Length: 101
Image 1 (tube, rainbow, N blue to C red):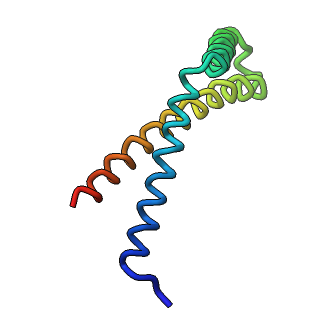
Image 2 (image 1 turned 90 degrees about the horizontal axis):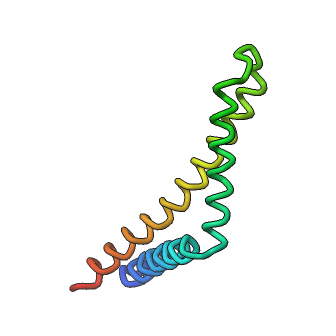
Image 3 (image 1 turned 180 degrees about the vertical axis):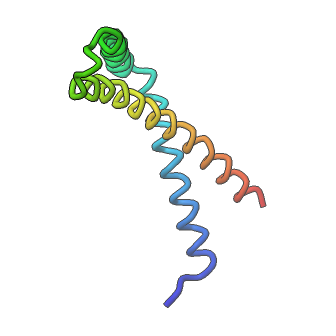
């Protein structure tokens, strides 16, 4: 049996608020010393990998792939955090818009 419109709206609002909370957690995490340490360490690894890419033997495919993987891994980590924050902000705006009525 399908839920009522109010049940669906409540569930949608609950999901929005969970997304908002996750985004806020990501924002708070980014402002911690731990996050700054992790980000700085990852950036250092990326810079080192990029420098190594300029001098690696061009026929050393495995080493090139390994170094590229380091760069991609940091990019993915950073994108995930940024996406969490942006999703939380968007969900909050949707929640406000849905509850203005």
